[in-house]
Image 1 (cartoon, helix red, strand yellow):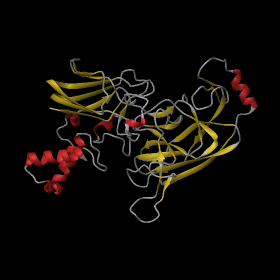
Image 2 (spheres, one colour):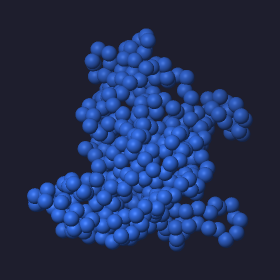
Image 3 (cartoon, helix red, strand yellow):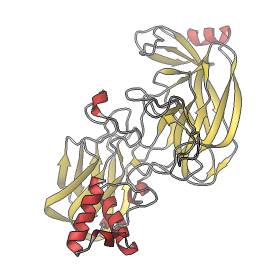
Length: 404
């Protein structure tokens, strides 16, 4: 709000306007665009910047993340509440998904595919499809088959056997020393999605089932749980007693760091919503899609390359990084397990067509980097080389803009 007032005051001063003049249709659009330029988010609007020469460039990436597999290298979490993976999908048939589960007793798992009924919302109030699957514990023969391939060692180890998976778990969730035998459950919802949007793949509450999680974290991808928010409501459902202008809705919330692991999963065919095309769509945070370029996890040197038909004299470059738009901003009084947001790219450098480093940053911790070059660079090519912030978190970028 303060930033909006400041930008409005600047426009009024420069153009000799009264504040009420900004309410006119021709002026309110200018205010909105100026706010978007400095990183503000206005639902339903995207940046349209004719001065940004990146709009004229051919953009290529060294790699792009495709959601085909999230490895089961994290903790196992019991379904003591309904959990879901929030994933971006494009129009068309919904892919098959697989999860790794563990149970000690024969039981059933209900899986649901849900969407938000209103564009831009993240409450899955539309049930698209539901399936119930039988989940069985491993038999003695299966356990023996898996155990035969196991050679004991200290620490955390996963070995694939002929009929499942055996894990010696030393995670901090109260399962130390326990042996798990998992099975892979494939879900084909056999339905289609009509619009590009986020979908909720829900695993309904069943305390007899545990699901394997992953250490991998991806910009624009997250897990949530159907649980109460004690700051807002005593239960998981907000249901006003009368018409007071407040929606009835469920609370689907992520766990605080360092918990809140994504569930390990396989996706077929892969979800390809993390490409470099997102860099110029005028949105610099997840909204109906990740809106970020995300490098492949195995890319040792994530690089974006901009090429122009003719040389450009670039004076200013603006970058928008992911400082965790997926989780709600919290007060520092609650305490945090990290000093820099784990998703944020710390190191990067910009290189021109002659392989000259025009700018380098080695300790970034901010969302927006506005770079004014001491000496403008004239080039028909600009490369942005980034370092992945963590072995389990690939480099990502929401936006790159260049100005002459």
